[in-house]
Length: 202
Picture 1 (cartoon, one colour):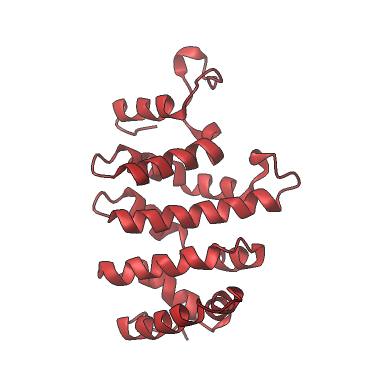
Picture 2 (cartoon, helix red, strand yellow; picture 1 turned 30 degrees about the vertical axis):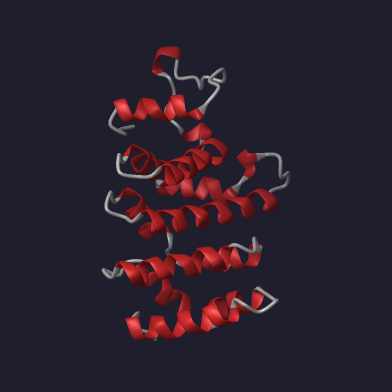
């Protein structure tokens, strides 16, 4: 039976998690979250909570849980449906900046582990997590975040970094150049800026 994702359940979890995070072994609080029966289901469910405070703290837990770059941690987390709420909040222009920061930090942590898990860490195209996220629509969601005039420079720079490092080949091609990727573009900002003119439509 899945534990109901109530604020009271969350408060108890957050207090236990925060206090154990001060331990020298950072794996302890992460393992506690990942091994406690039904706890990850509740945390993921809280990503949909209407209370922004609760939702933000759930994002913090996921960010911390991926920050150790432990492949086994990432695999367990990705067994749960975190992608759909991530897409929702990235597309939502009302998502607070602090929440976007934590969502993007979590994506960076996951993708960094994907680099390390590949047959050759220098081959970004071999990153299985980048492939999975791209197929789920993360590139379109990140572009919607980029096109949001309300986001601050910190979030904008993080989005640019994600697109540049892991999703460059998924950006729309220049149709005037036979659909080829323009390798001579010095900055990804030029390519992403085109999407603002296009209204973010692929």
